[in-house]
Image (cartoon, rainbow, N blue to C red; front, side):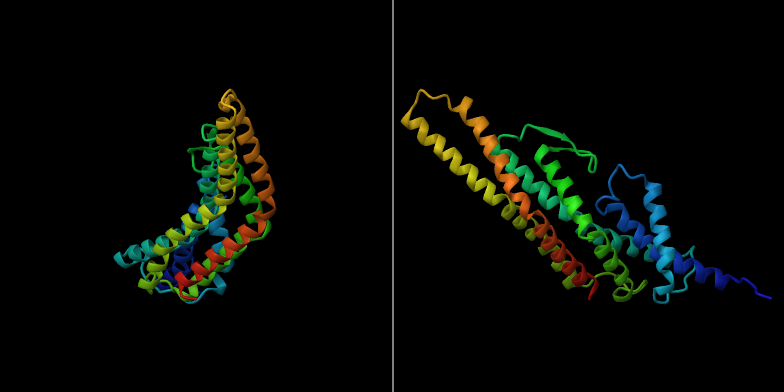
Length: 258
């Protein structure tokens, strides 16, 4: 007769609970699923389903009592690991949002803002458009599956109960912040440079013909030129998202020690 002992129950709980906390923390902050429009029950339910699907493939988990100080420490470690990996994926969208904000300020659309349903704050319309575009490209190139695979691989390189990231990983994560602003500036630099040339042209026209109303003539032309530049840059959207995703995946591999 099969008997269910405390050790068997502890084994079942450990195989489900530790991966569940890491995956649920990842889904809370990752783009699309981490949006405010997605209910919390949906995120937790998806984390539970994926945990149930992958748990036979995971390495052996430590057998620790659930009501224990060490168990709470391990839970905090799993939440921190999942949140960090999800934050790296979340930054992909923020690069394009920051670039769109910079371009909007240069083309005179900085005042045109709308509520971002993902973050719950007001952002420029162009930034919101970039966010929708990058989200669709991210799904089209299976970025969500690639990042989820990295999280699953982290259970082998960062086993449960074996600690957090190394010091070199934290240094790489801190240096990654500088790369985010640099990548955003490189995205916005062509449009900003072109709009600067347009403004310089209007400056020369003002000196040549002072009777021209620069404000009435320059604003619509600058805005139209900015929209044309943004439209031309759409052709490079997919390669850029894929390139940035590869950089993020490489950093995630470096963090988890792969």
